[in-house]
Image (cartoon, protein in one colour):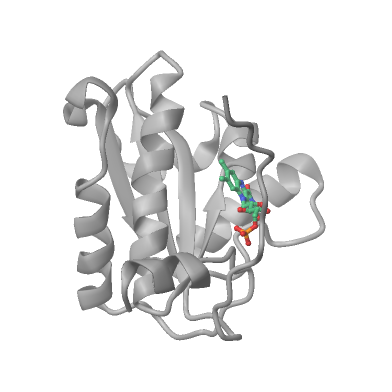
Amino acid sequence: MNFYEVLEKRVSTRNFTDQKISEEDVKVLLDAAYKAPIAHGLYDECRITVIRDKSLIEEISKEYKETFNKDHDSLYGAPLFIIFSSSKDSDAKYADAGCVLENISLAATSLNLGSCYIRGLIENLGKDAKYIDKLNLDDGFYPVNGIIIGHSKVELKGKEHKINTNFI
Ligand SMILES: Cc1cc2nc3c(=O)[nH]c(=O)nc-3n(C[C@H](O)[C@H](O)[C@H](O)COP(=O)(O)O)c2cc1C
């Protein structure tokens, strides 16, 4: 799939089959993540956690559901959840996360995998969330944003979005 076909197909997917993501595909996703730009080149201040353990993904979703009385699974039954963490105090960590996670999303699309950026759950559960202990992060690192990935139940098809643009 060429770059422009990937852009046309990228869409947030919230409906996955039970099929797991292969080791080979995870490698492609991580390779794309590592190619992302990071503010000041501070790659050492970033961490990526790949969660393939479905029971942990379900546990994280349950913690969010119970803490905020949500009635749905905010991780949508995905078989793979990748969390970007940072030790940065500055807003740069959100930009870093966006770059890394979008690279993963585009790589996933190129493999015909569905993906969806996850901010709300991580942001709202915050730094004291119970699940963070299970991520085995180094001291001082906290989750920023994440992405869920899986085989989509429907064919990937991007939407037509517009952003108001002015020219000077
Ligand atoms: C920074 C950011 C945070 C997002 N957080 C969530 C989220 O927590 N849960 C979710 O289901 N979708 C989330 N999304 C997906 C957006 O809702 C989605 O990208 C947007 O509605 C456009 O739709 P599309 O991705 O299908 O083109 C997020 C997207 C971005 C860029």
